[in-house]
Length: 355
Image (cartoon, rainbow, N blue to C red; front, side, top):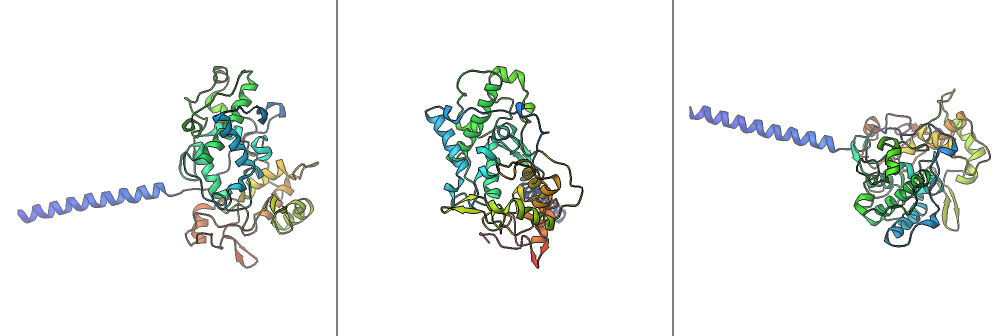
């Protein structure tokens, strides 16, 4: 009997151990990045008069809150001041978020702020606004994200909030200064039932409506009639893009500063950034390029040149663990070229700075 009891006790302990081990493995799998590179959300393109128009930067108030807003603006348009700290390439946030993050249909900050907190496949959890900003530093800026609650993330959140709230207040004729928020409130984002907004705005827009303001993201465009082609895209690039972005996509440097951004290579966004997707790049290009354009590329040209731009090496995906094919299978089953062989070289095979 004693022997049988010992066997039963041992079996019970093994059951507990295996259950704990299974729970640990499940937790590890749950916390691992599970990005399927979901597309950036957008809303249908609207008439120009429907877009929010933030107040003039000259109206940013004096004082501690205004200082945070101004710092956010400065970091946004000159992100290179964080080079070799949080930024690992030659880009600025405003390269993709046009007109200092104010331009409709160029993923404006005033729309993005009210779209968070939100669930993201990128890290399989609900992200606050500052966590979304951290992702931008990691992928689009090919850098190291500032810590939560850092002055940089607070400032960028304050700037985004100020743009959005000032635009809403003017649209709904709410007079007065933009209400000041604490750092803790700023970094959460504005897609919350408890988010403080003037009563007039609260009555006019639900939380979900605020999260889908006209002009949000990059408007999607129809698929091309012909399958997109890097070969045709090279011709488009040479005719319409090369002057500003260089013959090798390296950007154009003026007085030691990359004023016109590199589109591929070691100084551009990495393979984890959303812009490496052909469709995302096509949406952005069709709506916003060429810069200060007097004309618009055709749908086919936008798709083709987006394919050409993303048909080159760029910094490694930060999630890379030594297996290009494994990373491709897990994170890159979409409209992109990661893991494809081009001219004898596998895209994404170059090691990251950390590796």
